Length: 125
Image (cartoon, rainbow, N blue to C red):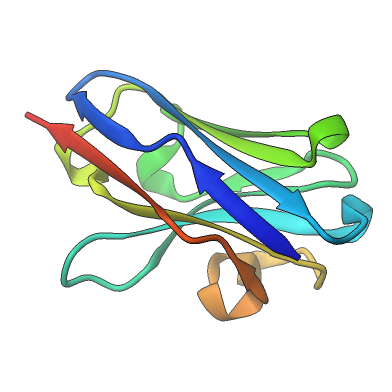
């Protein structure tokens, strides 16, 4: 699976951005896709995930109510709509995909076999 992330940029606190992750190379009906982020000096952390087959989603607590993950099956693209952005959301955002079992373990980076190249999101105060 090849993943191409885009949509990052510089935004003021309280603003919005939408990230996109275009996928190719497989039939994605049995896949789940996730967004992770990594700030300088910190470990990569889970943000959100979506299961292609039924649109089931899961979010880390810090983004609930502000971020929304969605998928467009026709375009094989997953989106991360980010609203009410905060300076602490500043990081490189990565999309990832795998075809394993949907469980609490989807929050772990090692549960994903395919990764995009990352896109920088910077939120100024």
